[in-house]
Image (tube, rainbow, N blue to C red; front, side, top):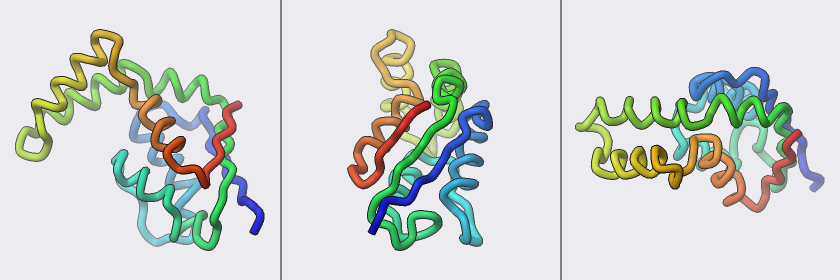
Length: 131
């Protein structure tokens, strides 16, 4: 079966919430539910089995204007993401979040964008092409 081609429009991504809006637009075609704003959910989505990946064993993911997304999901968005989690200590492991935030602040931790790229790379059936 040939690979399907899906396209993320980086110009639509301004922050983490709009990233998931774009992921839902591209991947959740034909579904009556949407993916929540969760890196774990993104990872699960890329295994396929529903939405645009249903029935496909390979996909080419074109990410247009990837540089705009890199900026939108960079250090500031990542910091805000971690700080938001720290405000919910009963939900998240705050010690780990503090370590992640400290690593980010020291330039050693990945940004949200870099984490997304790693998640995609962990799925060999998905070929990412940035533009």
